[in-house]
Length: 280
Image 1 (tube, rainbow, N blue to C red):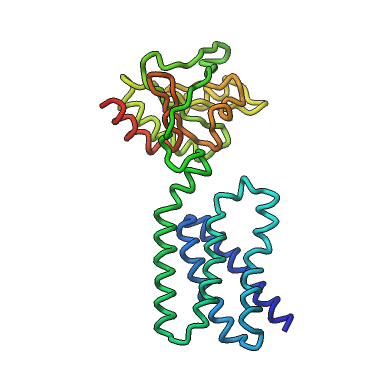
Image 2 (tube, rainbow, N blue to C red; image 1 turned 45 degrees about the vertical axis):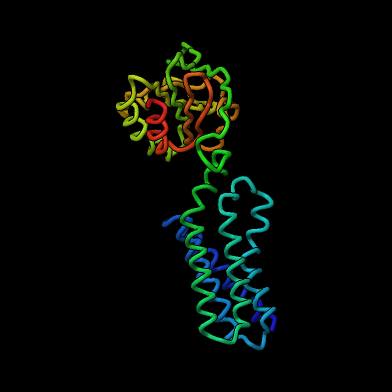
C-alpha cells in the first residue's frame, strides 16, 4: 500500500513539473487550464486502478505531490513565487472537486460537474489573471491608480556627468523603468519608441535606467544609442529610485500628470489609451 501511495505522489509531482514546462512555453493561463483537467482526470484514473488504496489515501497522495515542492518554495521565496499562487490553488481545488464528484453515482452528473468546473477555471484563467498580475507587479488590480500619488524628486543623469530633476512643467510625463539585464525591457522599447513618435509634442517620454553597481553611465547611453532609439534615455542617480516610486518589477511604466501626480503604474501597452483620455 505504501508503495502505491508513493507512486501516486511521484506521478502527481511529475505532472506538476510537466505543467511548469507548459507554463514556460505557453503561459500560465494555458498551464492552469490544462493542469486542472489533468489533475481532475488523474484522481479518477487512480481511483479506478487503485481502489484498494481507498479514496481518501488516493486524494492525499495526489495532494502531496502538488504540495511537496510548493510549500517549501512558497515559504522560502514567497515574493518571487506569488505570481503562480492561484495556479496551485486551482490544482488543489481540481483534485477536491474530482474527489467529491467521484462519490456521484450518475455518470452524466459527473460529466456535468467536470465541464462546469472546467468552464469556471477557463473563465478565471483567461479573465482574472490580468488583474492578479497587475496586483502582484504593480500593487493594484487596475493599472490606473484609484488615487493619484504625489511624485518625489526624480533626479537623473542626462549624460555621463550632468544631472536634471524631471518634472512635468505642464506636460504629461511617461517614465519607463528598466535595467540592463532585463530582456523584457528591451522587447518593450519599440512600443515606447512608437508612443514617443506619436505623442512627443505633448508628452515627455523617458526611459529611466536603474544602474547596477559596477555599470558606467557612458556604457548605458552607448547601448541605447547603438540600438537607434530616439526617446529620452536617462539614468537614475539614486539606484533605489524605483522602489520609492512603487516600482516592483522591470519593466514598469509610470504616467505623471500635469500636476506632478502619478496616475498610472503598469505595462507600456496600456499607456496609449491613458494618454488619449488625458489629452482629450
